[in-house]
Image (cartoon, rainbow over all chains, first blue to last red; front, side):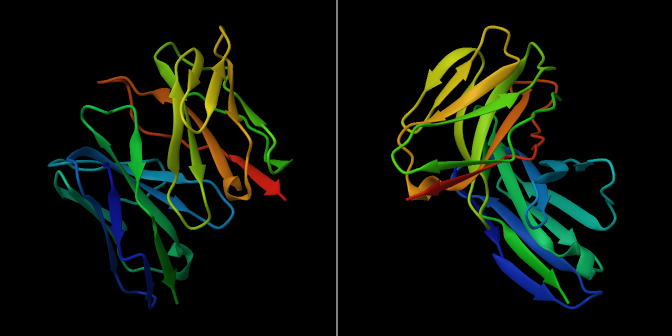
Length: 116
Length: 114
C-alpha cells in the first residue's frame, strides 16, 4: 500500500513551453503533498507544500508564478512548469503523507524534465 | 528545522555491517529522526524512523543516544544493491506538528564493493 505515482516519468520540451507533471496517490488519500526538485549529484530541494483545496505554500526562492501547483483532490496534485527554460531541467519528485500516518512520506518515482 | 550533518561518502564490502552517523545538534523536543534511501533517478524510500533509544525493523537499526544530538543508521550485511544515497532527516512529524515538511541534507553516498 501507500503507492505514489508520477506522470510522465520523463519529458522533453522546447524552451518557452509549459509542462504539467501529475502526482497521484494510488491507494490512499493524501492530505498533503510535497514537490521537490533535484539537480544531478545534489540533494532534494523542497519547492512547495500542497494541501488539498487550498493554495500551495512555496519555499523561499521558488517562484509561485513559474511553478504552478494545483491540489484539486485528495489523490492528485499537479505541478506546471510555465515557460520552461533549460535551467529548469531537473528531476522533479513528489511525495504524499496520510492523515493518519503523518510521520511518513511516500515518494513518487520522479519525473525527468529536459528543456531544450 | 534542525540541520543535519552526515559524511559525504562511505565505502564498504559485501557482507559487512555499515554504520552511518548523523549529527543534529539542534534537534527539538518534538523532532523525530528519519532515514531515507535513494537510488539514482528514483524517489527516496523510507527506511526507518525513531525518537530515542533503539529502533529495529527488517532492513535496518537506528541507534539514538540519550541526548538525541546524533543518530546512527546500521545496515547489517550489506550487499551490492545497498549502494545508494542515505539521507538523515530531522523534523516534527507528530500529528499537527509545527511542520511535516522534510528538509534534505547532503546525504551519504554508500558504495558497496564485491
